[in-house]
Image 1 (cartoon, rainbow, N blue to C red):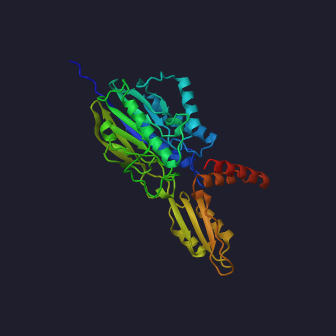
Image 2 (cartoon, rainbow, N blue to C red):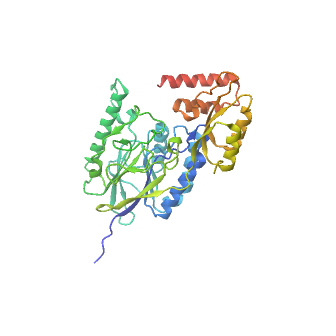
Image 3 (cartoon, rainbow, N blue to C red):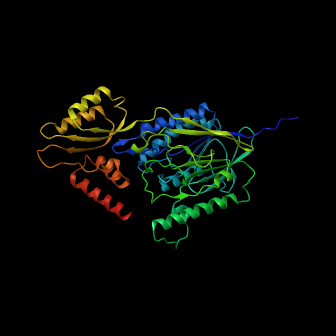
Length: 417
């Protein structure tokens, strides 16, 4: 009598890669590529079947050439994984460029067309990116039986609010409409004839769930912009819920409802975070065992350094600061005119901390009024970050051209507020 083959699909859950990102004046490409390499190594070492990336694959600050190189690096690092029958499932998050991702999806579907039918049985061995709510089935490469996946991108009006005459009077009203639309889309997918409530099912979503621990702040997002849902019923509806958006790894309400967290420290608010991914196994009856968390070692250190006495502090830091050359640093400098030479202080800090990403300084002597550098834009929000990026890129241009371009950028960002 033949022994029946059973589903045993191993998933690696990760999220919030932010490929092509910057922190102030520092391009994070090399840091993030090393983090992607760690994930690729885990896929190989753990013999993973599905790499599940729960949104924010790319950064909104990524340049076109940076996006191209990020995809090339992906291709090189995951070629063996895909050729061996592994599958990559991902979806768009709030930092992904919607037009770019939709163009990428159209190009991939042109090369390997999909039927577009809900619950479609997709072929393993390739990358799939969801820019819309999507229900698919993936065959287990051991048994051939399928595991169901629902992919829920970050809810934007373009994706979730299709009514052309829809109006909302406040950000709060818009957010509530998006919450309601997100819930309806999930219900609609689970009510499709092709969806089998008795078959193993995985949900992946880029969203904030009530009860999640945010930490010091959301990554480049205010609480007023965030979309928060009540996910209390998700644990009963799905065998595993793979979440992205919140950068801190954690379970929410149940062990199998999880944020994997980001794969790198993205800003100062994450300097003490321990980054990780989650690995789970899905069988014919659902989750096999508990999800396991794997720490990602050697993430990039981020720190803030206060300089109150430049002569003494520089000497002390040179002697005692570990890994200064690799650390991303926010510098706060106090100096005394007539005692300290500011240019020498800045030059010395440049040599010690070549990866400083933000700095400000204050003259604290009695020879004149206090001179305080404005809040450094490289540690601020989207508008300030864009302006700082443009100033760095235009440093070789004439003053008139630079000022004209900055004025246009300021006007465009003001109109979008």
